[in-house]
Image (cartoon, rainbow, N blue to C red; front, top):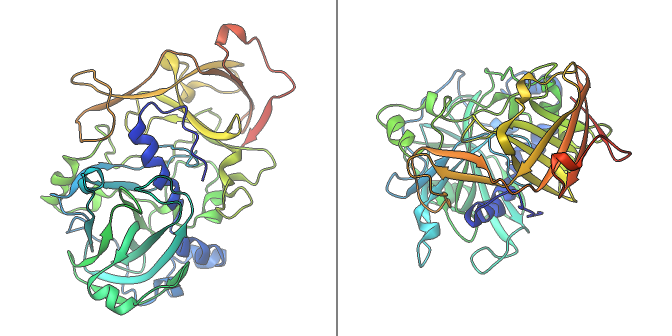
Length: 414
């Protein structure tokens, strides 16, 4: 995966990016679900082979932390944009202390509730670098289904453990199994850590719940059937565990688990896709580079008071920036606004308490976002109608140096 990160200020964020893209989705789930009919997706997946062994319907409550609180560094909620994750990310991250220890240690992963492990997979990744993250590494993933429509999924595991490992046996490279293995809340199911990752990816999904903030939700479900069914982890977590996890959550704003669906029809805010590139799926079913035609103009994932712009192709690579001056507000830009200019700065995360830059290596409360005032470039945008956007990037230029579009302008739609 590509790693260009000129839009990010902190080395640890770049390290995180290495394994964030290692799990663009739970591979087995994505491949299987994308081969199902639309009626199957709309039928809440009941009876699908990937849900084999699931029981009942309805939502559920998380009663056990997937990572022991003593091992947990902090929680990154959904909604960031990092590298090839150009649109807001639909899963959160539970980072572990052991990944930053010397020597590094791994952490146990536990079942979040009583349920059925309906499917597991082993993906061999080729996106690592460095001595702690080799070029090729294993990424184990698991789906724990409380009911036939409510599940929590984990990826970036080093291996399975306990009764689940005994049931599954040794997976072959890029293999999927559907063990229909019953687990109890808090039961050991595996381990996470280096060389695979700095912690686990966490999806929380309810097929009976659908996000309403996408102008064209069908293009998301066509590529990733679960995406429009993401729900709030904290809303489904029992006290006192909920408060204990919230105490390590990086986002102060509500919803604390974050948000991914920012589209407002007729407004600039939200996600856009270059005309002719296949929309969200990029015509590539989630493969390398599917994000090249993506563009997002959205609130920062951890500090929604600041606007970030995320490009699928900024000088040949995916990059993210914060808007210098934090204006204009994309939620107020429409076709009547005319041409708007955004100056792009490096994203800086800092402590609202001390003002110090946050490097991501420890939990710090009240993280905020701002743009470094060193101008990296300027982007011009103009909505030509309700669902069409004209856009052009001018790397290295200030807004004063750019007067209007030229022949390199691109068209984006929803």
